[in-house]
Length: 303
Image (cartoon, rainbow, N blue to C red; front, side):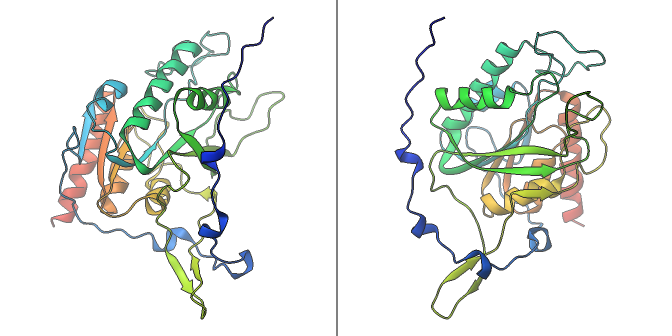
């Protein structure tokens, strides 16, 4: 069998001067809990027109809706797509699988669809922007994240510059498989266009010589699974999880996109932290729930 040639990757853009980013030795770092001082501004931001008007939830196909967003206009993309949890490696549904939109298609079509999603990410992301992509695999598709990442590398200029693990109770695959470990973490991949992407790390102290020491953000996150069970949606993440990355990778009034926004956790957390948001989801019930959630937040502010 003839093995196809792999595209040569230029690693030079991935290299950077460590001295420029040096903030002191590990021993000198001040260790603190990032959740203790995540700032909630409780201020409603003024909407901006970036092709789509910010501070809105849009119900529709994610790729087609993102096509309406202006180039280089999004500061942070924070999302988690369907994991293809309903399909086995042989493209057959496994027993008990639920019919989740975009989660029950053949593997090849699913990967092509997500590559189209990443092509839109590349277009709409600002040059110093960040993509926080929470993604996992199922018992029947353990290699899927690696295949997807390879496809993203071959079809876009985006690169992974960091990863994190999120400890959660209901990871997939669950226990009960005869030869698999029970997982307690899901992966979070940090994509960007350039190694000099924006990180809003706060200075925790300054030495007598002027050396700055930054607040510590760990790549192991212990955050709640969700903000409460939502009927019909079993794969939500918590606003605590969202705030961790919003605090790190954005500033007040930045525009944050969640194109798989579900019941609106990312928009909710973004708004509470004084950021603008765009939420997109295909399921009308989820969009209605997200809009109701945002309306309750606005009413709370105006009391």
